Length: 318
Image 1 (tube, rainbow, N blue to C red):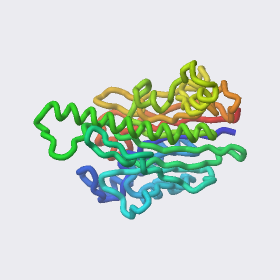
Image 2 (image 1 turned 60 degrees about the vertical axis):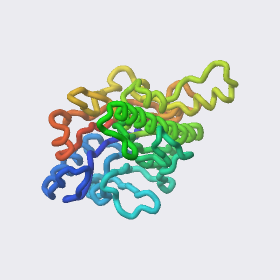
Image 3 (image 1 turned 135 degrees about the vertical axis):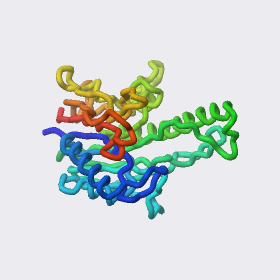
Image 4 (image 1 turned 120 degrees about the vertical axis):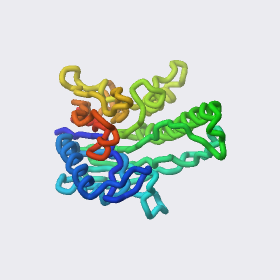
């Protein structure tokens, strides 16, 4: 008995003729071709739960999974009735039963002023689901898509001034840091309560400040035992470091940037899936990425399939 958990950025999944980002709308044949290519990848992944990113229209997601055995979920934030052509959202594909209603986390714990830019909510809301991995194990799953830290300008800043660009770069990283801290609080609290998985396009590589912040660190030795225990319980782990040494990891890049391979799509697990905890409920058996479709022009990849590769983690009982 095993379960496969995965993340896959679907590269602007939308209905035919939809306009977004100033990109030429896709024709019906193009949408059908992209859908067929994504379906082929999903079949080869054979995952039970897939966190997906960059969805503009729920009907496009429903069409994608037709015949694949998935229930598709892509909720809009409360009070929003129409998709935002500037902001794709995350979703969940599952062959396993949900044991609670989906939750969409939009608001930050408290508003922030980030170098002159107000930040009151996640720029891309976080999806939370509770899934029955197998009959006696329920797992909380978070699906995320963190924005890449492109320069963020406010007001009438002078775009001809290099110092303004430097400030905009710093502001973008600071805004991302605020979101990461809020996400860590959300996911860490869940991990303290029970088995938790974070999956998504984090736009962050291994050992980056973003990933290190989400994983957490060992608590200082001088803290009280109960405080240390809370720190440890809130940590997340990269399953590539938990899988068996021989044949357990078949993981390459999930993205190319300027021709350089990167791993920015991640599935992270709570301590409940590590071999050293008494709270162990499962073990990582394998980790792989399906990147054979990557290469070539990113824009064309996005139109034909996806410019990202999925990451798939296989979990088994302890």
